[in-house]
Image (tube, rainbow, N blue to C red):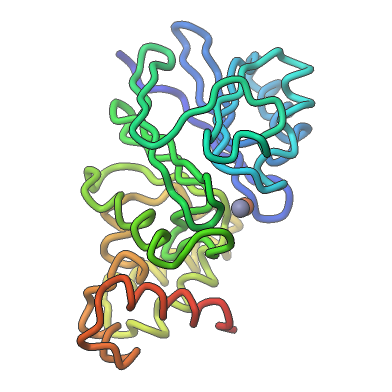
Amino acid sequence: MPHLDMRQFMCRSDNYGVIIHDSKTGATASIDAPDAEAVEAELRKFGRQLTHIFTTHHHEDHVAGNLRLKELFGCKIIGPKNEAEKIPGIDTAVKGGDTFSWAGREVKVFDCPGHTRGHIAFYMPSEFSLFAGDTVFAMGCGRVNEGSMAEMWHSVNQFRPLPPVTHVYCGHEYTEANCRFALSVEPGNRDLQQRATVVAAQRARGEMTCPSTIGDELKTNPFMRCGSREIRKNLKLETATDAEVFAELRHQKNSFK
Ligand code: ZN
Ligand code: FE
């Protein structure tokens, strides 16, 4: 089976839009719908009809286009069961552990409470792709708005066992700021230093820095590196649990300039 065609684009100010398309069946899904016009324009460029929206969480910058796109295309919206009442136009509610078939491929759902209570991620093993919404960013993670730090730690770190080549599609282009924070807590990490150089060059050219991969995140994302000696030493948390290190990192990131 050929791989799906995946197109990522910027919308609003720093949101990523992603459209995935199967040429055989014509099935076409938008990962979240930050902006109806931007998603529609991207679809029209390639002459595609939207059949689905996969919604990760209820924030406005992820669902703003739901109703308009549904009106235009009659697409079906698949979203999180644990906050279904907040997802405009939702047709099918799914939760962690669920799997469903889309364009002949398996899609696995992960629960990711923390950023919002019902946040979910979609994982397509055949495509080596994870759609992580606002849970994992390149070298960062989402703010903990509705859940606990312990929940968010688990939500982020449950992705560690995925194949390292797995593409991580995330909700925002926050990479440069995340990278600065990561360097502040783990300046001796060679992989991180190298990635910082790559990212600076990409941004200088106006390019997107995502999708990332699980392998790169394991090497450079402090929120997935709570066991790092250097991070622990810098936080003065040498004997703490990984979840405690995570919570301190998240607190510090909230006020990092
Ligand atoms: Zn959000
Ligand atoms: Fe967002």
